[in-house]
Length: 610
Ligand code: M6R
Image 1 (cartoon, rainbow, N blue to C red):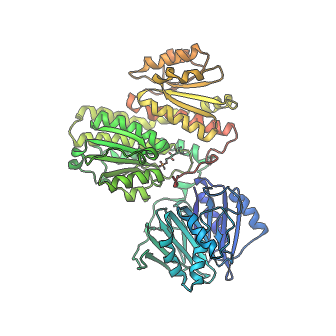
Image 2: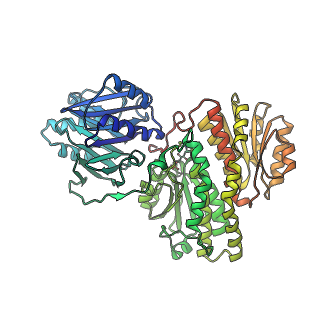
């Protein structure tokens, strides 16, 4: 989704902003632009397309200066084109604004401003902002007062960065529900809507809170509340390094992140399981007393995080013996569910910024229901708005397609379920010990699978013209089938659907022809024989059979056109291993079809609009 950057210092702002925007590219966007204070004049350059297009345009139309703002736009109001791209200015170019989020009452504001003679050029909601500021200034208000007035006039969830022509050293900023952070360098300040653009130059950052605004120049930075009062604030050292958000020699973030998974698991296992075999969640304030009262859990999430949540239901019911429902946040929040006092809402979000998930959690909080979140970005809005959070600890995920965050969410959900079971004294020492031994073996098994990535690369080459794919799995591997289908469609644009194996004969089996590959997740489990039946039924209808099986399984292999073997493990851990070949299949299919895996069309990394 949209991204914001800003800078004030001694450097050439044009290149600082471009580098910052490149750092935000992974979020997904369709146009980009910058506004620079050039000798008291606001100069704007913007282009539809990629940052490269903007860079080329800047070569022909350069701007000079040391203070400015920039933006990547993901179209919501109005198509992606140069006019709708940010920054937007008032007609006289006295103020320029970049904006993330949505101004819900923009249509009324636009009418009001038009009646006062203001002229609009774009289809965006953003364009009301520079005009509102210009209108306040026309009435004699200072920039600061115009800013304060703006906050009472606009509704929605948003973040903005602004430059005024009469304050050539300053960048103004504000946020009400959309993330924004400041970075401090040596005699320079940076602004960005996420940490990635700041990792190269700033060790110290400040996460701007909702309903805070301020301004910075080369050597000063002030923060205020929406009531106008100045706030004390502190920059903190951040631990994300530039290497964490770099491709590290891989051609794409997606494949780098797929290969990071064994290392992430080693780290999670080390930090969550003590040498004595006890599971620890030190960052959460969830107590034994509180958990013993919880009689229902509702997991809220979207997309891949939702599929991890489906596994969370299995784990929580199995080990913690708490009735658990998993629902997509976008549906849950609009259906007036029965939620009582002893319910715990668990929000799962990689980014911690997903608008639907955030909205459901806030609604639950408003009903005095306790909210726990599982987030990869611990400085995110969801983490901050929850009563307590637990860390996913997958490290920054840049590829739009979630891979390492999924497996890290799954292992954390399993460990959390065991932790709660332990708090309630309902898991025996022996059961826990055996499981932990198996969990400790996972990183090595993951490495063995990833070492065979070339097999999936070869398969992908056979399916470059394929139009439809089907994925089947049962119980623990039903969410994996859904995730495999989501991954394939989002990065390769091949239509793919995932089903529970048992549901397949109730309709979707009609899809099977000799042109449709069906991926059956048929590793050894209690329902292995049922998956074999699925395989037989598909073979009988000439479907192309791709199976994921346990090493040494000859039966399923003989029935398959393509077969990938994964190391043996307990059924409850099998999703973690089985999803890896599906992630690789999706990645290599995208590459083979010439699709950009890190920035699939129409998609954004964090979906901050509903
Ligand atoms: O940041 P979140 O985990 O809340 O994001 C939820 C979904 O938008 C996300 O998982 C999306 O489905 C991914 N593109 C899947 O790869």
